[in-house]
Length: 323
Image (cartoon, rainbow, N blue to C red; front, top):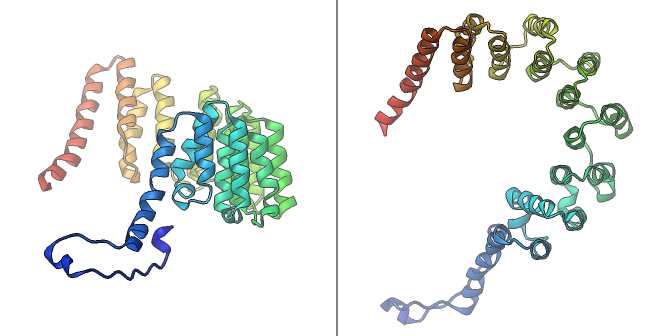
């Protein structure tokens, strides 16, 4: 990057400079021209619509840090090439990037893995993880989780379970709560709730503590699949374990209560939230309002609506007064 280079300029200005006549040396022109020559690449990448020209432009800037370190430019280019069905261009660009110095940074390889995954190129994403040592890049749970996340885009029970069990021991990786949460979410999306619960149990056996994301994911899936008793039991277990519900957890529970026409219980939960230092959002209020309308209590719906707007006005008006 230009700003990291040590540039010394030795320019001599004639006396005409004192009269206000601008004079810049040839060397100064070249130095000042460096940054403008690099910056338009980002503009060109953003505006280019032809897939082949986009590919060639990105390839020509393969070592341009202004492009490579710009996450949006990288992701946008791959996304548009994927939309055009040019997976061959994507593979050529990303494989080339892995051979460059940045390919030795795990954070950069994680980005490559995720880009392949978002383009639907699961095999290339996994191969990138499996072959990291070929580029002199060490693996950790970060790259493992990225590969697992890619598998979750099109979840398959056997593939995810096999990767979760085999890859850590093969590559000496200590998986974390994020790893299990990715797997649990995948099983829930597949409707394999028993498998998701078993993954949570396996998580505990591994010495890891299920967190609020773990519980919220499972509770939401259980409510969605009408397994309410187990969902309620898991809520109670979460509280007994000392895991504090967050905004998403409360919203999941309130949505369940509203769907069950239990508007008063939903309202009680809404009132409980501030006492636990969890502030309701507009989604929370709107669900309770809907619940009272469904339960044929329009007056209560109006009261909650008024309370919501009164709360937001208190937050906004002082800020306007200080501006």
